Image 1 (cartoon, one colour):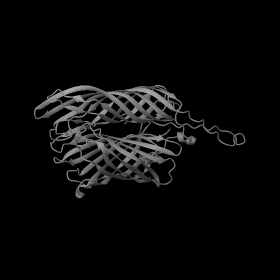
Image 2 (cartoon, rainbow, N blue to C red):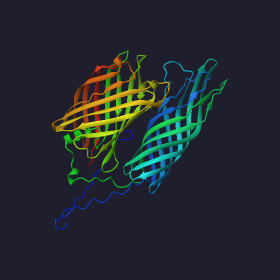
Image 3 (spheres, rainbow, N blue to C red):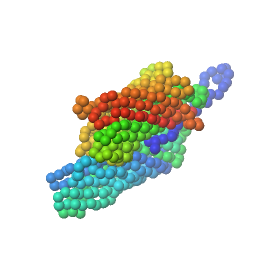
Image 4 (tube, one colour):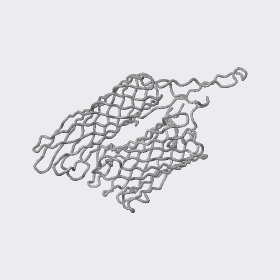
Length: 477
């Protein structure tokens, strides 16, 4: 995100008036930052995943299960803040994308959503830049359905209403900009088909959304940081490179990472995955940061059955790292990671809600940045007809920084599917590449290209990968 979480920077301002020691024996502290103001109108956009918890009540069969969809749309609302309390109203409208049922064989029926609209009141607790809120209201969902079993063939469409309940957290990272993460549940009434016998379609909807809002009324002054007057200078290329190579650095960045995987599947086709990975540090207090890292994959996926590719959006992954602002020589971060079933086509995702822990450890001696990022996720919800998930990821990274912004890099992504047979479990790449930090005008950029050979891999997995990344960097000024 960003798409929606894109080009932002934190501005640091520090005044240091000069005076004789006799006149001013100590430096005057900077004026305290004003509390963030949440009041006023706002407009924004969101994307995420949705899954239906309903079923087709076909006598003797409940084969439909829950389907998953990619959702995206816009929202608008108004907030009124009274101290630490917030009251507001918000409306949303978005589209949903789901091409066909998850199973490769014909099913007895399917339901897909076309659009979703909601209107709700919000009530929340405010703590400066943070807002924790709940929302309650109503939703409208337009759906298509089909039935195809002995004696019944039917297709129909319907717009149905229901009640809405949700919770979310929002962070104001600029005077006019906020980020949010939200979960919503829409309880929909039954939809009865015009068939004999009639069939009831139950389709309660759950949604997880990431969003960004623009506030028309300023939220307040920039979050000032206590730095030296020399902080206004441009960071040296090597310092900026080392920050860009640190997954939990206090640095806003928007990487665009292309992963081209060769010889995938039974037809030895090419798989392309473009990961948009905005990283935004959220400042909890003077001692702790919360680093948000979102991974939005755009995928061209070879079919396991036909000699063709399917294109679309995959499952979105969100990582949060709690990290101390003054960690010492060993830099670390711990937190949760979760994946939502947002794929626009079943072949592009796993159809499951995944959850687990994630951690990163690194050190930066001399010209080096050395560390590892690990996580493990388990399926905790989603489509009951899709295979359960228990997957591990480890990404060791070693970077050596040289003059003029150049660096050598290796960061293989090692994965394990714990539910697979032992000889089909691991993917272990080896390789590396070269990159450079430079500027396009005044915009700092990091770019690299690297190649990896999958020395250990399951049957049908790609044997080579070409990875190229371009990152927009937004250091403090």
